[in-house]
Amino acid sequence: MANKIIDQLENHCSVRQFTDQPLTKLEVAQLISAAQHASTSTFSQQYSIISVTDPKQKAILGEISGHHWLEKSGHFLLMVVDQYRNLQIAKNEGIPADVLGTTDKFLAGVMDAAIATENIMVAAESLGLGGTIMGSILNDSKRVIDTFNLPELTFPLLGIALGHPAVTPGLKPRMPEAMMHFEGGYKLPADFSTQLNGYDAALNAYYQSRNSNARPESFTHHIVQGLSRDPKLRAELKGVIAGQGFLAD
Image 1 (tube, rainbow, N blue to C red):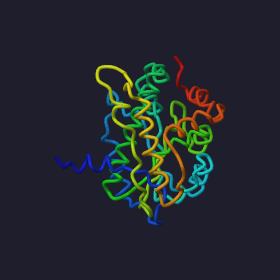
Image 2: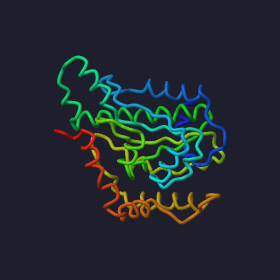
Image 3: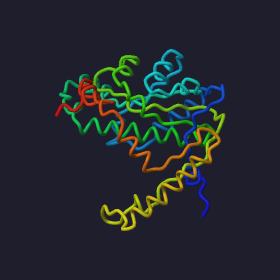
Image 4: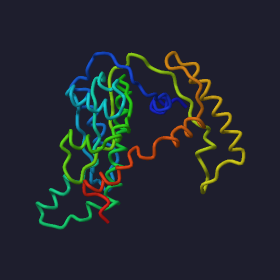
C-alpha cells in the first residue's frame, strides 16, 4: 500500500550542493517545531539547537569539518547535548544535580539530540529542502565549544547543513536487510560473504555511475579505509566530553 512518509524516507539522500536561496524564517520555525515534537528521554528534552548564519562561524565549521561546501548552505543547525538548562532548574530548586554529569545523562542527551536531528531532516525533505547531517564537526569539538560559547554540561553532537538543492544525487544502495535485521538475537547470515560481495558490487556500480566524483568504491573498501585512519583523529573526544562535566561517574 502506498505510503508517502515511507516513500520519502526510502528516497532520502544527502544533499551537499545548494542554491543561493536562504531558508525563510517560517521554514526554520517549522524545522525547529518538528525537532521539538520528537521523542525525548523521560520528556527531559536534553538538547538545544543553535542556528549558524554568521559567515565567519560557518567558515570555522568548514575548516573543522573539512567540508567547506557547508558554508554555502541556506541554513546550518548545530545540535547540542544540553544538561546545563536542567542544571539551572536544579539550582533554582536548591537540589543536588550530580546526576546530570553521569554517563547515563550524557547518553540521554545524545539520544534526544540525534532523534531531533532526524526529525529535522525528515521535515526539511517534506518541504522540498535537502541537507546533510554532519558528524565531522567532532574533528575539533573543543574549537566548536569555544566558538559557540557552550557552557558546562553541554556538548556539540551534530551539524545539519540545509538548503534548497542545486543538485539531487541518486539513491545510494543500502546493504541487504539480511545483513542487519535479525530475529530474536544477533546472527549474521550463513551466506554473509556472498551477500557482502553482492553489496560491494551494487555499491561500486552506483559510485561509477555518478555524474560527479565517479570512482571505484565498495562497502568493504569504505570500511577498511575508515579503519585505516590515524588513530589520533578525535582521540581527545573523551577528554573534551569529560571537560564539559560529563562521564563523571
